[in-house]
Image (cartoon, rainbow, N blue to C red; front, side, top):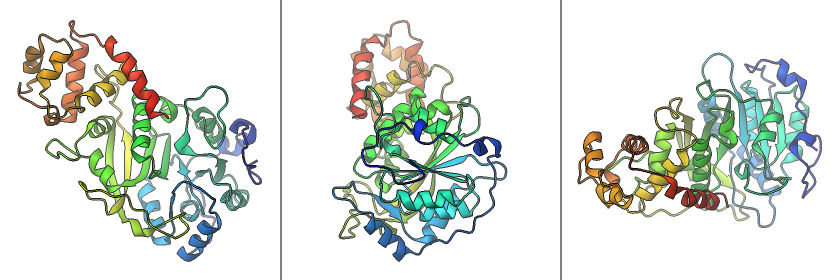
Length: 385
């Protein structure tokens, strides 16, 4: 299928469509010679996007400016030595794809819009294994369905098998880099889905510490990096991402630098009344090597996630009240041992405080987390809808 046009409604599995090529296993994952591809200008990219419009297509943003594409390429480039494969989500007309290839980076492009596939596949066929093109939607990875996964949804096991990437230990180097622009309509939901996968070591994180390099709205970046005292921004999402990943801001770009697939060319900038939102932020999320040490493990991580979420349901409530609601008569003693003030509110605790609290609860003979389980599973089910 990837040698030609992908038929609409195709539901064959990736493994049957694109068996791994032996050259990927034989070549080192290092520098490739630049193929010297032509990079189209912004006006040409905009025409390609307009030609690829489909009725009722979800809102998408694309990089059209060669300057911005080169800036992103510079941000994605690692240090000296072998580079991991880069998975590019929704490349569209492929301007960034070409610049990445010209920089000697090995790319796997995952595209769900059939109109963009012929151009990407033609590019793939002109190169010697440096580019692979897959029909699918990375942001619909591992849906909670029974039976076969129907494209453009993807199964992570088949995706990684196709890329020729094997699972590595958690403390090993990053096996894969991912680049994409988070879908605006489900931005928050996507962040939660990725977070659950991270803490459970499932989906892409089953293969190791996969590094995400994603454009997200400025307001969501403010949430991810917020600290106690930033009342409007500090949330459960802040705590959990900061514990789980090193968060690095690579670049900020005005919304006007991107083009959309809307017929009128509108920017469709989401409104934000409480937080600044003038830019898209390119953010690197690298899972921490020491995430699953101490009392936090993949077997109890869902409980930890739900505990933090429940604490922030009433961020102004006192921690002692929350502990009492969990039937902990010795909550005061526990706080003294953790050196947390008895009057502390939920929004006063730093991310590391929540981790210390959870680990202390796990070691407490008076605490049982069995009552969490049904609510944890229901929360996960809703976040995957």
